Amino acid sequence: MNIQRAQDIYASKEMISVHLDGKPVWIEHVDVDNGMATVQLGSSPTNTHTVGVERLEEQGH
Image 1: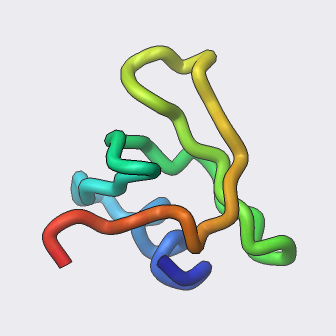
Image 2: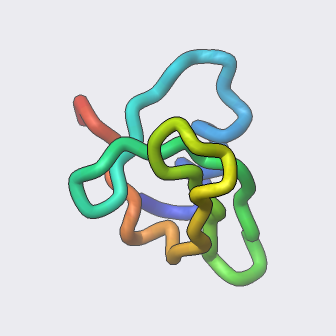
């Protein structure tokens, strides 16, 4: 995924399925300057990771 698409998904009111290493995640924050995104894994709000947006995959596209 590219940084622009990550921003679009983060800003969207729609529920867009995004996966990291085959696991569903929620985008919590996008760091445009560094090409990174903070994502929440599963349903635990404390289970977050910051990863390069290129590791994120939009499902259904």
